[in-house]
Length: 195
Ligand code: SF4
Ligand code: SF4
Image (cartoon, rainbow, N blue to C red; front, side, top):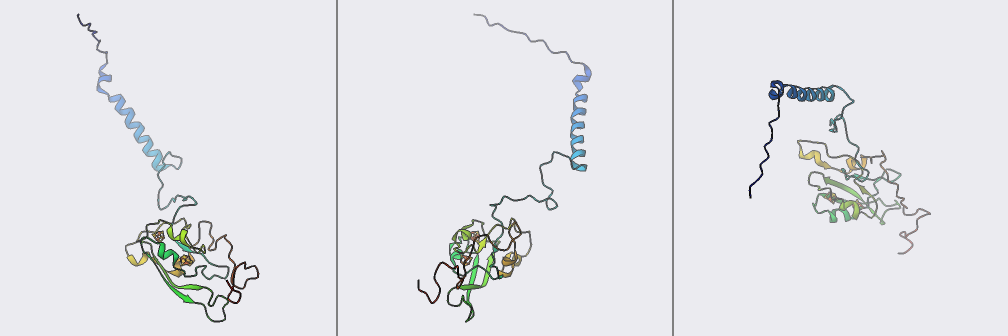
């Protein structure tokens, strides 16, 4: 059996085509055109953000740096129960509990954080602290990430910093209601009336 061989004709090209000068010129023209458009005009196809001038709005559920939510009177909602620091796998939350002063309706009923520090450098942003909190006192809805710093101290966020940071919508509170001890609408217990 003889094999049939098909002989292909060599395509004819002119000298200009063979040199590819025209095609190289077209390619360079396209590249330079895109470069000029993307560099000097706002109306371009670039999807890269010019950070830090341009910032991306993070999704609502983005886990940003922490904040401590406030009550209406500006005091922390945190009752220093230590649930968050216990749940934290990175052990980066340090809390020292304090007692409210005698005469305060919260005295003997709940505590407050005298010291509350989060080491944002050690944090792995797992969100366990937020999940563990029974008071909606700690949140990660700031929509902000840690700004760069060369000092470790800058990553230690104390109570004052944490209380001052707002959520993405600007509030330092939370929409979840909270009934205070002694509050007429308080559905639970108080110190005088049992468990
Ligand atoms: S996000 Fe995770 S690692 Fe960070 S403080 Fe909360 S529990 Fe700890
Ligand atoms: S932030 Fe929440 S979980 Fe942590 S100590 Fe305060 S009340 Fe407890």
